[in-house]
Length: 402
Image 1 (cartoon, rainbow, N blue to C red):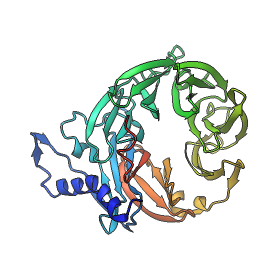
Image 2 (image 1 turned 120 degrees about the horizontal axis):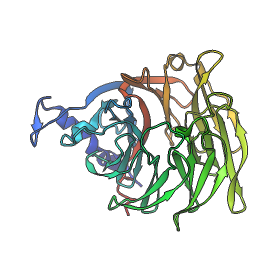
Image 3 (image 1 turned 30 degrees about the vertical axis):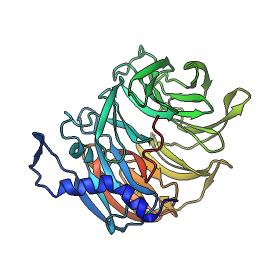
Image 4 (image 1 turned 90 degrees about the vertical axis):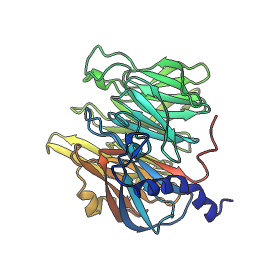
């Protein structure tokens, strides 16, 4: 069993390295490269030692601005209170030209590595999870999301350039060796693929068809990971986006609708013989979600033609009963004050959770922390458009390498 002392030792790498560099002058150079130091903010919240020693927050940056940044929330307990660090990638990697790049779209930790999907820069940045120092990059055009199984990473890609065009090409999934960072295989899927989930040796890919609007795609591609070929497509709903599996083997897929006469919908799929089928749906607009245990936490932002504005909703769905669970999050004044909720992540141990507010998309956003019952706790400023987050666990970052 990992003791508190061992957990604190395992957490020192990132926190102490940041503290040491911040003690130097801002204008200092290392290897003739200007170091742009991370900005620190004290949340004032007492730190509690647990297996979760930190959380990375990927801030997308407005498209074309080349302002994707990476923030870090220190939960290690190495300081009496919880501290938040803005833009740590630039500090840890001063020699990388243009830093992370244009539009961060996904972030995942797998083994000792952290994978950062940078959409419009056509690359996946790979760094050490425990100190954020760069290992290398994988060049993938118009990449969107990443998931993992065994020795491989799987990255969805629109393939073609950013272009709303009825003649847009179909997308692909790239198989990447997690040790060498080399692309080993590709497979063609539907139009503009988004999130993916792995269940029992199959990769399920949500196809959006966002570039061929107003037609849209409406399928989930099923890829056999042994042959790496598309076996079939499952008809689900138009303009698909999120795709997550729960502990019961159900697949939860979201449709964004067509923004005219097809409303956003949440679907769940269950195995029927040798395939999955849609067995139910819920009339909720889901922009982002996080499944922990029996609970699916979500928020939604949907355009209302009648009110001429985005309507925001929050909720928790019991994935076993498929029923909405009562919560008081929507009553919190801090939630009502959010301008554009953009991401959500839930602590899998304590069930406290975080919402990310993109604000006006072109300036600093906010990270808001809530207790398990939905009570607001604290908030901090982030980079531009915070939308994706990943917890860093003590003692887990070196265990799953190929």
